[in-house]
Length: 245
Ligand SMILES: Nc1ncnc2c1ncn2[C@@H]1O[C@H](COP(=O)(O)OP(=O)(O)OP(=O)(O)O)[C@@H](O)[C@H]1O
Ligand SMILES: [Mg+2]
Image (cartoon, rainbow, N blue to C red; front, side, top):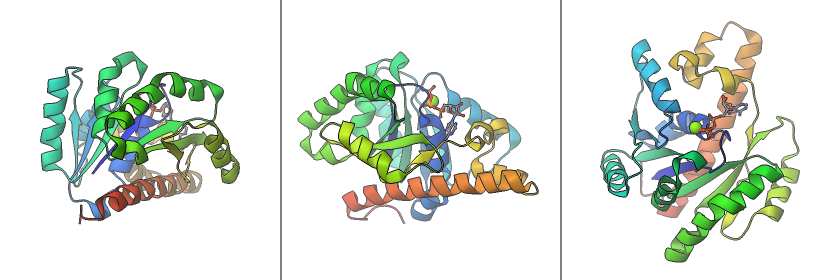
């Protein structure tokens, strides 16, 4: 199964979500081999992965792949090889600066495409202008793809009324795009956990003796498990749950 985090608008949490979902317990419960794939030449995840390797952290069933070429053939070959060797693929799909090639091809490859979006007119109009035309093209070419595009409301206030958020997105989103009934809250812990190559669970172990930090990271782990579960369930339902463990 391929889950892609895509946004043509920068800084909406794609890379952070991709790295955390790849290392989530929900993912390892269902899948033995998980590939975290960065399609962004900026290499946010690659630098983090290199730090992990330097620190000698264990990656369990998770492997990392960086495809930065915008050449269609190189991209397709790379993805094909990764899908042959992995059960779950989590893709971090780049934004505006990288050109549209990756965005279009990567979205077409995904089974579940997640669009992290803030509740802001800026994000919403950038989506309608840049990403939505790509989605419309894909759905027009392959009508079965129309159920795969889901907005994940991001950087929500941790105590925000969820029904209000969903109602807002339901109103502004165009056809073929639904709003997930789960959110990715804004939390300071997401800005800090991954320094020195750590993942969320490893960070939890490091801050275990500090009650305040421990509680924050526990909440973040809960967010991620809920998001990962939601996405995996969508994908497994589509597949008739034939994939994975
Ligand atoms: N839930 C969150 N709450 C608060 N800050 C967050 C959260 N998730 C990520 N961040 C921070 O927001 C910034 C953008 O996140 P991230 O790099 O994951 O976004 P991106 O969409 O991959 O950005 P880019 O378009 O540059 O690739 C980072 O500094 C990150 O640490
Ligand atoms: Mg990124």
